Length: 425
Image (cartoon, rainbow, N blue to C red; front, side):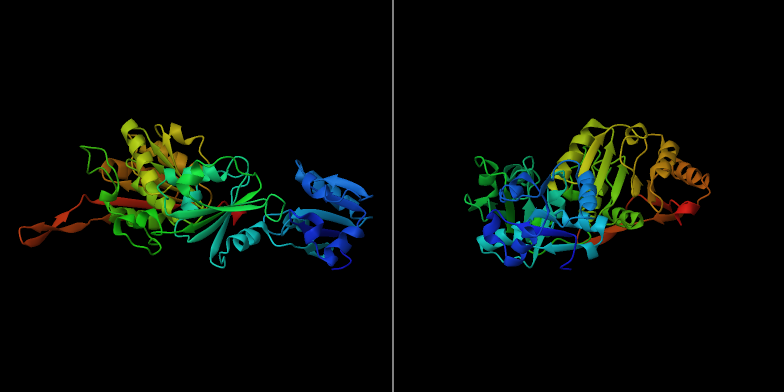
């Protein structure tokens, strides 16, 4: 590896002072030095060609590849270049045999070290150039986390977002300018951090849980991690009144979500979301995915949003509109659940099958014979044979000093897999 054409050297905010002799030697023998403005500024005496890394990274890496044919190239990166850094892209272009990486401790390592917190059980999340939505979902059941921030997703904004979705049980540390002259590490309660004055843009946010593990555990005061399968009772959700019964019962939810076969990063549509119970449980399962809850009733839209906030499901987006028109601009789904159709079942099923990714799953809950027939015929018209289950559930209810069974409405659950095209197999 010592003869690699491209050497990638990790730097801290202390610049040359933190480099090993091996790293300094790699920089000294380079004829081309690439890096961001901050990294290049540490080496004003360098006499070779300088290449600024910024926008247009793909083109810059191509230029690095060209220069490496006749020159030894050194790329300066922050901390560990293989930790949310440029090294992976350079290796993908040039091959590992042509690249040597000399890492420094990452900013996350320095942050936990400065805060004095063991981090072998921590989760690392990056919000650098990424959406804030979904961070609460990804923190579900997590005891410790490090979050890489940016100028938009600041520690204050992250704290406000956590509090808006009921995540009050974290203590925070903001670690600014690590290893640099302006280094500062401070502990905050989330409420204090939300209203904190301006912080340095170069920071790492640490979170450590101080109370019960997640929103789903609050009712029971259980300090353990939340259940893997939510299985929330209907009373855990706000509902439209007097339409109290119009919510998917948890036994039906359980089988329907199982039929959808969600993965951690699934994108799902919930058409006719009602109170949002299916959307929310799907969001709690697909922690790194996203759920779009489509609901036309204005009261239902508000209740969906209220329930999503109450259960920390910030990866659920409520879409106000009538299907199928409201579906056309949504991202292609891995799974589609249809709980309501407003008389357009056939059109919704046809659009869902068109937009589903190959191998994706469609699940329909039908209470009426008409919806069952329309969904079945729409699926069969595609040459597909669905799996259909008639679910009849009775729950024990008190009767004086006795218990009796009370039947819930029977529900037909239709599920089908969108086949792969021949060339996809």
